Length: 393
Image 1 (cartoon, rainbow, N blue to C red):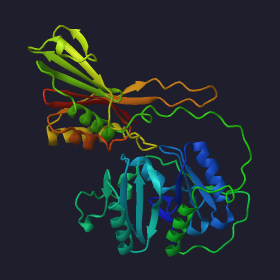
Image 2 (image 1 turned 45 degrees about the vertical axis):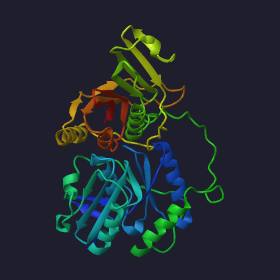
Image 3 (image 1 turned 60 degrees about the vertical axis):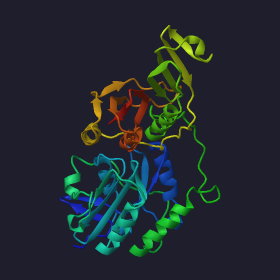
Image 4 (image 1 turned 180 degrees about the vertical axis):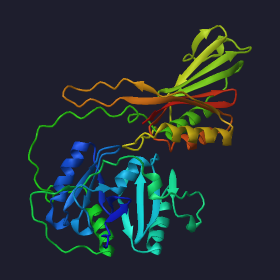
């Protein structure tokens, strides 16, 4: 029996592929928006599913692609299993090729695709890889690409996949011709251009009581690793020398820098008024950061513990970092407003990296790790140390 283009058989299980994906702030809003958009007759959508684990998303499917209620989305199963924030994978199946693209934890709108030929998937694969940096690139060994890893779909999937189950779109009779494979991509591009839907296009939504939003994760309000490390480096390099005093250490946080000077032969009368005298031989100077701190990307999803340890230990061996990684510890969830859903418990690991190399090296190692919060940058005796906390699954 022929297997439809939108179905992949792995063992005894059938998975749905070729869905169109959108991200939402919460699972509830993903379900609501998914139903509204799926109900639009011009989109010819029969089924939708919700991704609950990780980043909330909804996917749209069609019965004529072979999708059926109860099927699990293969893109969701992989996105929940692969322990990396941004990855791309090309996989050969019996009758064609699959391409999955996940960026910062989100299945991309055109990141769940089926191709008839190797040439077609390779062309899309090469173009997508060139758009940015990736934590992991999965490709067939026959392609001979550097810095890629070959994995089969069966190798990546483990356990019982329950998230991303397709459900019927109720409330209307669906008609319209099935879009052929070449038109699916054009339809997706049109669909993406349609977002966000205007009030004239979207169906009217009945008014419902709106509950307060849950508290954001603790890392979301903190600046990204690279932007804070860069701002601290600029502030440290701008620190001036004082006659008769040596710089003992410089501490930098998002609130500013604190410079500790140790007296060698100078006298306190030489110091500017804004300096704080700690003792007869030690003074401090504080200043705010000049470089702007950029916000981190939205919806960062923590990694599992082991990929973080592997990345940091590997960097420590390559760059001769002094690396310290504590064991994960649970944190109390942040307080929430009355009526808001409670926040999940969070776990984090304290991390310290020290090096005599420029701090940009530390930034390059830490920036790709989602949910990493830099708590402080320390300069002492020509050595840089970054201390922080990384939240884990």
